Image (cartoon, rainbow, N blue to C red):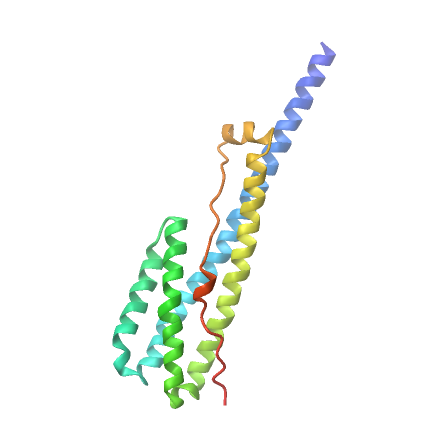
Length: 181
């Protein structure tokens, strides 16, 4: 009887330990996504400010401004992670073109407000990349845990599953151009 109680206690302890590891892994994933979301919102908030600044100098770029605004709205309204990643990737091309437009306007290149916004955008892009790497690392850890034996048996029972990576197209990066005097 004592041996049976000991076996039950060890088994219960093992299940509790696995459950707590799964909860900790899920918390890391949620924390990582929260960091990404904050930075993506920061970038979304910067876009209208940059557009407004550039509009004053490049009035004929209306199509670019409209496209960038539409892409921003799509990204902000995306609910599914894969849709959000695709929408965020779609922002990079028009945003990159907008930064390139500045090269054609010497007055804009020396505008202090534009330079500050450009630096903020570059800093935000770096923070997005850092947050994405942290999130994907947490997802890798969670997925490894959920798919490993014997945790995989209990993970499904407790409602834990594999998580989706947040992939962004690295080839469509925003140029880190220095327009300083």
